Structures are given as structure tokens and as C-alpha cells.
Picture 1 (cartoon, rainbow, N blue to C red):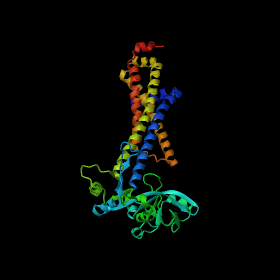
Picture 2: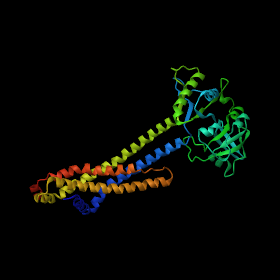
Picture 3: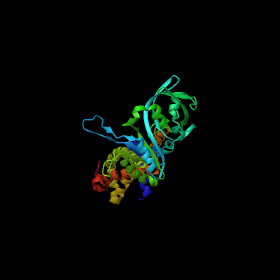
Picture 4: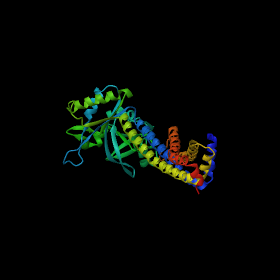
Length: 409
């Protein structure tokens, strides 16, 4: 009996009891659909995270104080960066495209009768280059704004919407700490509140902030402090070199030797991307493993029904053996039946999984990424489930004695 005839017999056997076949098929359908949907969502999240991190700026390197924990000190202590650290890096580091000092402070911002609390970020004109920020209207901060200690700000799109309720903010003034500041620009919407989005930002010249806004909070032992420093290496190949230079410069400004622990975190965009990708990939594998459990349950259902089928068709098996059918023909026939059931369920499951993924993407919450690899993996898994869980029933059928089988009632 050739393969085509075996498949015809398999379909005839499956359609002889449609309800039972459908219920058996359902387990595989649900399992494959879960694999396709969960892997697609996981891959979509990974792609989204990667895209968002990459959009933060070209070859971004961030320097921040690291937290240390001391017995008896609640919450530990955080190392302090100084403005002099920024100046030293600016003067001594090579292959740096742009470098921005950053000091952040929460403040109340008022426009007419509307007051809200926002994080005010004091920085310079390089901040826009480092973070790849652009303005949708007005202009960014300029070097002259810091030189003149101008009372100007650039705001994010969310801030503009909340404070100005549809009005054009450019040219209008807001009140911060009893002083008026002119809005000179509005940042282009990034569309996300995470991973360093500028939508909720209010940027101010850092010299203006030190002079009029931050006060003693930004001072420590007579020195101006920073929340962090952000810089952009000239090329991707320069990132590691710049990090090494920053390490040496910070050791010099803080009087540390080469063997001392640097009390700051110097991290690159690539490192953050690698860490996040590792986390999301692990999550995707975890979701896939959960979905695989559904496939295994579906496979057990196939094996159970196949064993029932062997019992019901015992006389048929005995008759086929009596007229000369070899064991391998019986074995092959039952394997074809279980694999046909599994593959059919796999195809339906793939279609259902793709539909679920598309619905998730249309919802706008998460973009599900459907790949050929996911489809191939799901289809292959369904076929393997049919093969693996069909071997035992097929073996049981093939080893039946024709005499005993013909006597079976």
C-alpha cells in the first residue's frame, strides 16, 4: 500500500467518527495556536525593546552613581558625580561625538491655573544629539542659552498637552519656583513613556538651573553635582575605547587607583540592549515551554484515541494480516493516521495562532512578530507529536497475532 492510499485510509478512519476526531484534534490545535501566538508575542516584545533602546541615541554611554550598602545605613549610599567630572571627560576623552551633563530635580510647573509636577532636567545642547531628540516646533537648547543663563525650556509632547491643552506652547511662559521661563521648543513625540522617553521631559540650560532653580540641592562640599552624564561615541567601534577612557578619567578626578573599585556605573547602549534582549529571549522561551505543555497534552490525547482505535479495529488488523499484510504495513498505517491527525491539527492551530497574533497587534498593546521560523517550528512540533505519540499504538497494532485478532469480539 503506497503513501497516498495510506492517507486515504487515514482520512476514512478519522471521518468515521467525526466528534471523536474533532475532540482529539482540538488538543493539538490549542497547543499549536498557543505556541504560535506566545512565540510571536515574545518575539514582538523583543523587537520592540531592541528598537526602543536603539532609538535612545547613537552609541550611547551613560555614567551614573552606583549604590553601595553599608551595615546600619538604611537604603545605602549613592556615589556623587560632579560637574568637574563632566568637564574632565569633555577635555580629555577622544572619539566622543557629544557629551551632556545632566542634573534632574522634581519641580512644580504652572501655566495660568494649571499646575503639575514634572522632572526638570538641566543639560546642554549636546543632550539632543546624545539622545537623538528632535523638536516638532520651535528650537532645541543652544550653547548660548547656557552662556547667558537664559530662562528658556524645551518641553515634551505630553507636557505640552497637559499644560497647554492644545495651544501652541512655543513663545508662552510657565512659572517654575516663582520664576517665568519661556517655552522655546517642543520635542517630537516618541510614543512611549519608558526607556528614556522625552514626552514627559522639561529641559532647561544647566547653568540656568544651577543659578536660579536647583539651589543648594545641587551642591556638595562647594561643588556642583550631577545626576548623570550621557555621551555618544563617534562610532560603534569607539564605544569600548571611550568607556575605558572614562574609567581612567573618573579615577583621576576622584583620586582612585587602578585597583580601586570605581564607584560609578559606566554602561553602554549595547550592554543595555544585550541585557534586555537576554531577558526578553528567556521570557519568550518560557512562554514557548508553557505552550509546549499544551502540545504534549494534545499528543497524549492522540495516543489515547489511537489505542482505542486499535482495539476497535482488531478484527480488521487480523484480517489484513491473514491475507499477507506485513507488520511494517500495519505499523506504517497507524503512524500515518496519527500523523495525519496531528498535522491537520497543526495547520488549523497555526492559522488560529496567526489570527490571535494579528488581533493582539491590532489592539495596539503589543506588536506580535510572526516569523517563518515560528511557523516552521510549530508545524514541525505538531508532526513530531503525532509521530512520537503514535509509535506505541502502531506498535501494539503491528504485533497482534492474526489468529487472536480474528477471534476478538
